[in-house]
Image (cartoon, rainbow, N blue to C red; front, side, top):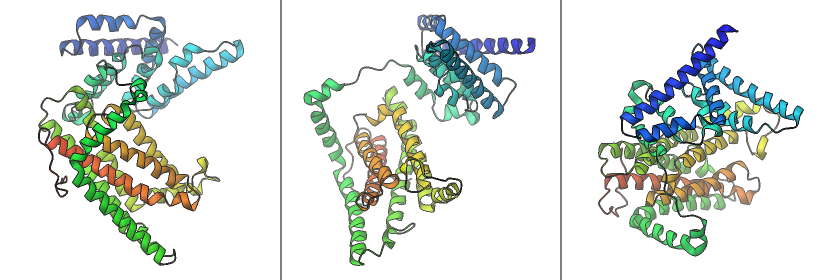
Length: 412
């Protein structure tokens, strides 16, 4: 028991030292001033925050002797045990464990499973969410210790600087209800029109390919589907568009940091969306073309007695997983999704088409609904390609009216 107490005290001391060193480093780097530092540290004196900070110390204590995956498992079980204990106490005494629910949350449990970053899980609890810096600074400190100088090479400081800033209020529901959406739409469509020839050329190509496939299908008395088969014409068109989009996103990210001039913190943080999205699209393109998820789906089918969520095939669960990850990334970088740029507008259209595609692929059983699958997939891929190509052009030529030549697309 004495050894356990000593370990917890050591973890608490490490947590306190870790946070204070991070705050002092931000002061030294000019990111915050001393008044802000004092205000931040006073926040920890609130009873609820102090309790959550003690549990953060316990996670640090667990992480000292245990390495992944044992430390991650122990952190998860620690939080889960405290939450279950509080819920059981609430049932017995008929008093809702409000503080426990704000401290030992499901998000804390899941984040605790991450290697390295998992010891910061309690900084995500609502009990410590009163000041965003209580999360941003610890994440910044852990990121500085990533291998291969990733913090410097990937410019991760831009993310934490943006997340630490107070965000100006955006146009809300009142603006939308008073007709502001109409003006916003006209402005966005006008900006997108500058890329009209590129957009028209790519969409015309996709529509022509779809019409040819539909003609072959109808002309064969609905028996010939080779045009739409795996690794055939439409699949190849889709994978090429995804590859172009992915490469443009990665190149745009690299080019942005090579010639960053006059960009604000929001744009600097938002460029990460295109790099992450680009990598994700490359992975998805390879998976979709080589049908990895279908092979995994067949293996999954052997262990399932039913298909949950009313999906059509077991591999659709993996597609749904891709969709969940994509939505999560879009949510984190929502400031970029709603930015006043043509690339953001195209990305919104692509996201809408992708939602239709996912639901048609996974949940549609009727023939009429399944007929939406290929058009929505091709439209989503085409719009994604356009969004990423246009973002590349915006970065490559920030002060120049972009060319209307449809051939001037991103080449990595």
